[in-house]
Length: 329
Figure 1 (tube, helix red, strand yellow):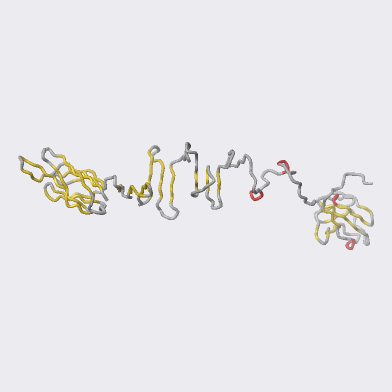
Figure 2 (figure 1 turned 30 degrees about the horizontal axis):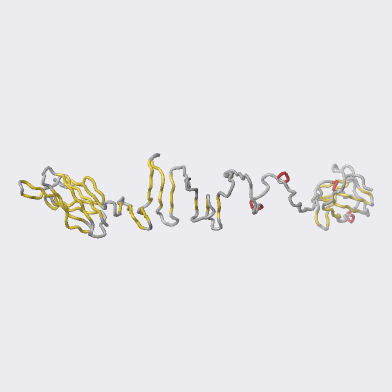
């Protein structure tokens, strides 16, 4: 018959190695080993100790029987030479079993106890972290095996794909702007604001901005500010043709050559690609018979003339306001 608390069903029970050969009636402290390996009982009560067939009293104070100190047993009085010894360590470590299915709940898991690699293939409801708050009711973000990210869709067509219904905006950005940067070239595009109110689309670097429709380039804004297309003027100029010839304003015109009274040469900053371009000229003059025309169209320049009439006699005359617009390639 056993009277007392039920003994543990699992544990690390070990027979302590015999130390009686070192008893000499003087020593009181002896090293404890089991299978020649040091053991470290947490308390004296974990040991059952017999000297000459008599159980010794465990006493952590060391006044009676014995106590343990680290991996040593210390007797209150030295065992005599020839005394017998046996001991059993009722170890503190317990056997580890596998919990039954569906028996471990939230209360059994310590806070912050699981690392990410311990969670596999499940769904975490109401996930919240310092930087993420997930309240979605269905899949909102997908990262595929190629590390492409999709938002609002599970199909990636680029490194970042954002999809929305036809009635909603796909994305909205708050901040000064967005940089679209080429991974290897220095050129990049900036979309944003300037001065807090103006909308700004900027090609950063000495690179043109190209605009396409239906796979065909329609407009090329060069790095020096010229717009090249079939619907924009390749060049234009307004100049004073009297006295010292002077350009009032222009686009893609570098200079005006004074070739004589009423005769001028218009020189392009960037050449035309061929001579099949069109030039429209105009002039302002107090003479009702004044007119202007052009000739000698070459890729780098053309000539413009100002003609007036006086009493029916035509003659060249310097024009105060001389204008020309150029379209073509």
